[in-house]
Image (cartoon, rainbow, N blue to C red; front, side, top):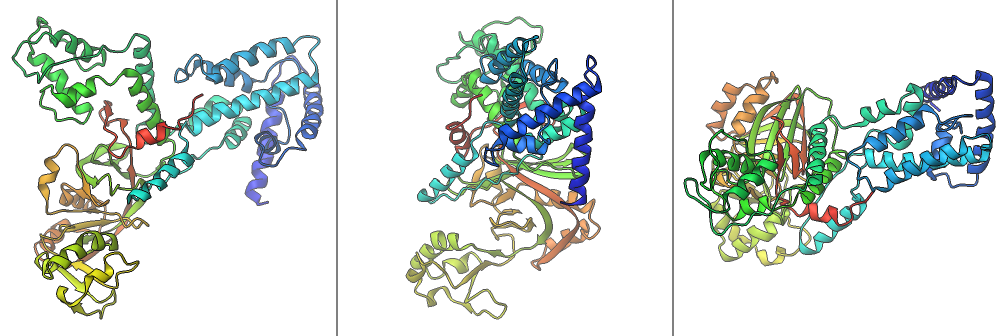
Length: 556
């Protein structure tokens, strides 16, 4: 045992002791005597259990001292736990956690009578501990069955889809959270401490509360429309549309008469709704807008819950700067001191070539990069073209070398029988597109080393950024304005001179800029989130991950 662990145990023991002495109706000696006897009984009861059993792990960490019951009443931790569960409006009233809480409160009243025995109190201790375990799991880990989801991702490989989602375990476990609560004497403070501080989690939880209330009030009515609704015209469905947008908070009265005419006031509400749902925001109500309007509030609640649970498993940052790339939003967000400094459109992987969800750190910027083409793209796209036309690569500025070494020979596309390598396990050739404006990586590349060989880069095909949904790449992240991101990096990296970099970008000479101030980057998948203006956003499930995760979503 390390010195740090010994100190922690000493503090924990002292914390629990102080907690036990807080019972005002009992003397310290009586209270300690009760817990000494209870600890012995608990130790004997738990001894036969497997070491991985939750109760055994918990009470081993707590020195087999009861934390939920005292001699004549429940402990303050029990009271806090019950209150927290009952007042948690994200839990349904009929949920098992709330029902079990009510049952245990009644049981405690029955036990804390003159006839209540030690055995009954220890049994109650264990039952409250199991209740705590369930609620702590709900709070800390959420309802996504990550094992089942990873299994579904693996099954996609049969379709040629290599999808990856890396999770990062929350900093607290039910055991460590209760250990800290025992030391500090407050379970409520520890639950607050365990709440994720990044990715707009707190604001999204507030939005969930609002939508749950909206559900109780009946939600919104189904909206039907024949054809497209345009501003300035009159439609019978306008009052229904207006009310639908009023309920969700998108429509605010302009003080003018509300008729069946599609006026400018309603247009503003429609555009707001369209922006919040990642739709083309021109105020025209067509098929996609109608479809989004008719998603029931119950499904939106599921979507918000799901994304709250995803945030719990993201990498929690404690840095001055932070890049977040949200795949369903096709957007990069650059945070500085918790505020949005830069926002940029991005292109992410196609559904058949999904961009992985993971975290890393931007360490290097490359100017005028080569594009070393991955084996998968060589076999799927390059070799078929070479088999039809030996000069296909030369036309795109792609050089073929006999290997990856510095002395590898450059060869002609017609000098190899490419049919041998169409489906082979290895391709002993390096395909590299030379620097220039036609290069698939454009003129700038941002590297954050990872096992997926994914990075952020420029692209010569700027037209695709005008699209609303932008899933077109092989998995890497294409940037709309890479120079603007380079400029931001230059403001806090002494070795990134933006002026000199711009001059170099006019040529074709490659340059590596090692960053002295690196920036963490998190590629996330959030289909519901609260933006930096505090507005609740919804996005389409571009990779089908919502559906996959909801298939085995846990009910509490």
